Length: 269
Image 1 (cartoon, rainbow, N blue to C red):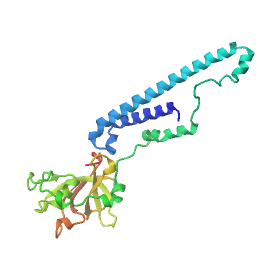
Image 2: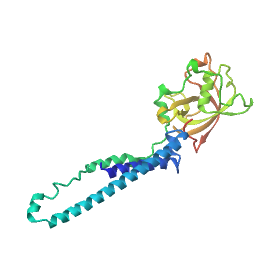
Image 3: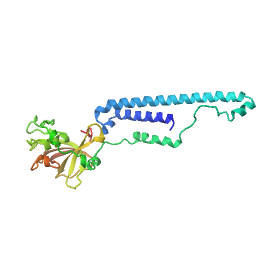
Image 4: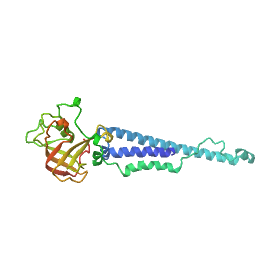
């Protein structure tokens, strides 16, 4: 690939980064909101560098063409003997005219694909194939009695809106079982249960980007499973398990009401 193609690749990658962050929120499909300034800065740098590379290469080719033109005029004025000594007139020319094969331009196709088919946010496929990374009880040395779900501050008959992350953490860690009998509201996407019993309301939690996503999910039974990857807001009560909370494989929610979400929020928690 010649330098113009390299510069064009940088321009397209920079434009893709800026398109996903400035006029749209596509970047939220892959990273957390806090990365937006870095993506914008990186996109601008790649865009500027690409333009610099292309301009420099075009100027170099123009200068090269001018030198060849002058050289051709000098040959035309030379004597026949001098022409024989020069051979084909390019033996002493110090410029490199080598070019990469045209097939190298195919390397630009993945860059164009970013504009045509933007990768979607992670969804049910990730949940079903990430059993080893699913949410679970935290290690003993990281368990804490402090929660950020607002349950204790709310009134006894109040519906408490929680992240699924907050719900499963409270269900696994709170030895006082303050969730018992309380109505909570969770929002997530539907995922079929592998064993065929019920379905999961799930959400993915990010530390920085989609590559390190951790699954948070709640098992729902007693109501028909909705279409996979559709988003729902579910109100219900925690199904209090018998025995130690820490030994429970997955927590359940008894549904009181559910409503489809037509405009899903940020796909990650």
